Image (cartoon, rainbow, N blue to C red; front, side):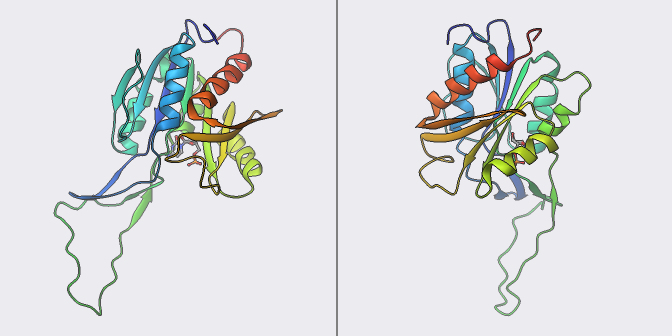
Length: 223
Ligand code: C5P
């Protein structure tokens, strides 16, 4: 796929976010960041100028890309929004944590010593939807969403495509433990408004190359 994204600026969000509860605890999810990093790598190899906004992950940066590390959903949102104007294609691969504690506790929460009163309530509020902030922009890049679903995979993906006003959504079925999350392989369906394309189970890198190819072919000519 030589030069399919030549002269284009690509922004990729990847990994989970962490939402702090107290100085030592946080809420997060199982995203490893692997699929997002492979998208960044494949986009760079296809000729794009790539910036990768990454949550906390244990991965080396692909060569030739600029990496911006963030921790929380709010930090990821400001890292994305401050770069979105210059971007032609945004791949929202990050598994942004949906809830954050309403208050950040200054001191470590103590385990209740009282056996009877052993319940604890932490009030949560939703984090901002980053991809929706991007698709709501007047002048917006081409936006590729990603979704992990456990049931009614294609129907839920199509709902999300519409609700979030995405140009395309890449969906995987995470009820199959051999794909998605921490694994090195993935199996996805690339869902466009008028069509869909299944990509067979293969390495996350090969999936990334094929997603890039499909997206490159779908881009409006002026992009
Ligand atoms: O979590 P959900 O299935 O809604 O994620 C679908 C898409 O929305 C993904 O592309 C994800 O990166 C994006 N998203 C986001 N900000 C959120 C939640 C999800 O950008 N707070």
